[in-house]
Length: 65
Image: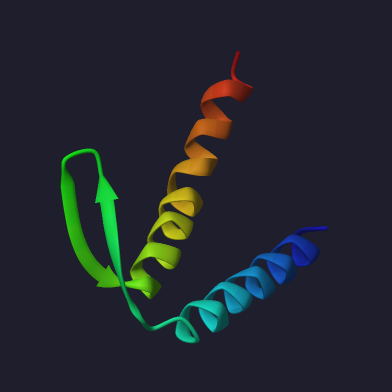
């Protein structure tokens, strides 16, 4: 079971990386009063990495209850 999860995680990571590399254009990000330009790769991969880091923490926090 663990090998299946690791395989699926690796496959998902590969798909995200391929998708991000194909989208290298600059985009404007606006949030409330802030606005800045950045690579689309950062907009795609940034939330993915944050979700991968914080997702297990949130899961563990709610699992204890």
